[in-house]
Image (cartoon, rainbow, N blue to C red; front, side, top):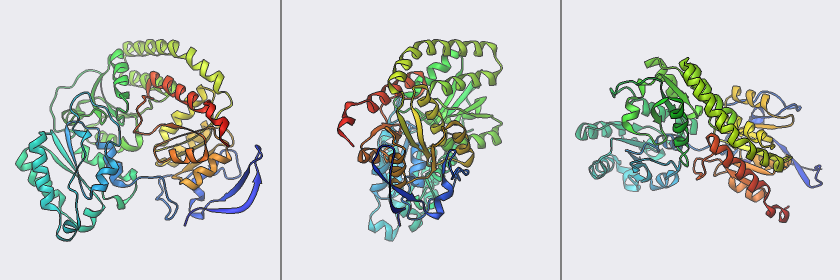
Amino acid sequence: MLLLVIDIAKKTERGDTMKELDILDGRKNQVSTVGGTNSQAVEGNKRSLAGSVSQRACVFCGSRVVLYPIGDALHIIHGPIGCAAYTWDIRGSQSSGMELHRLSFSTDLHEKEVVFGGEQKLYKSLIELIDLHQPKAAFVYTTCIVGVIGDDVEKICKLVEKEKNIPIIPVQAPGFQGTKKDGYKVACEALYTLVGTGDRPAQKYSINILGDFNLAGELWILLDYYKRMGIHVNATITGDGRVDDIRNAHKAQLNVVQCSGSMMYLAKMMKEEYGIPHMKVSYFGIEDMSDALYEVAKFFKSEELMSKAKELVREEFSRLMPDLQWYKERLAGKKAAIYVGGAFKAISLIKALRLIGVQTVLVGSQTGTTEDYELIKQLADEGTVIVDDSNPVELAHFVKQKHADIFIGGVKERPIAYKIGIGFCDHNHERKEALAGYEGMLNFAKEIYSTACSPIWKFTK
């Protein structure tokens, strides 16, 4: 059963016909309008309603996208080949060295293994691949089929680990056991088995960056900023990640968490076990990027670090603002719809769009909490629709209803924008353009301008 549409046509302010959308009872607490009659708190962290065709991915996908960027580890999927194809190169993460993560390995289970079990196939696959590629560690992902037939993946992992003397980590992520967010938790538990197993000396002003995946080389931009400040980055988890760095992650003095939805669970475990404090940051938009640098300097209580952070921000602002002002003048009056994976990213995008003169009229996420949506409500303009765990029918309706000029989302939202006939900005983890940091803000402004102001829209409805 999909969302129902009442057959009552209404004329919009532009004169086109728009049908009212009747939200299913089970979803009414997940949709709100700022300042409207349905301005109640948005409920987050709910399981998707059966039949609503959620945009969310499965548990396996969630675990895979978090662990995938570790470049010197072997990633093997114990399941049908379709699961490996679905998540191959899904992050688009760049590596400064070994690129074993770019290869997608699978045991390719068939009917025979479904009946008789696939443990021996997994064992042989691991031995062959480890001998061939000499990885620092191996992650073994279970899928729905394995969850049904009951292969003892942990037993095989322990056996191969003993033979090859490298960590072989089972990632128990059958897709049917929850949502993508549950997969994040499974990935954090897998990472946690590595943390604390190394013994590299600690360094002064040392942080771990959690939840940045080095899309289009964004992590390298951030590393440059921290280096200019005098901050040592101990481990990057997991963008451009390395097994030995993760094993020594407990030596850092602070965990800086970018994608809180995927990595906050690991940060909390490290706080409990090793006493390492953590802070949530965002690297999207110049306001949040600057706050991220200031907050780290403030944590270390160093006047020198704070002075360098202020100088860095001053330089970047003076370089960027003339260009951003040019885009703001030309984008004035444009409207944007946002639907992304994490609510924290959505918050940053609202601020970034406002900086270039674009009004946000729809904000949604797959994994936001009630607290996240309350913060969004405070930032958003009156009339903005806020939605949790939406679906194509809802999204298409709200985008048309609010007359958005551009839709910012991921790979699954692209077809919605194209079918409606409006511009689309790819903020997905497959993107090839760096959108984080100060350079990223300029790239973002360029992309919004070139898309929303394209002459092609003269020829669409």
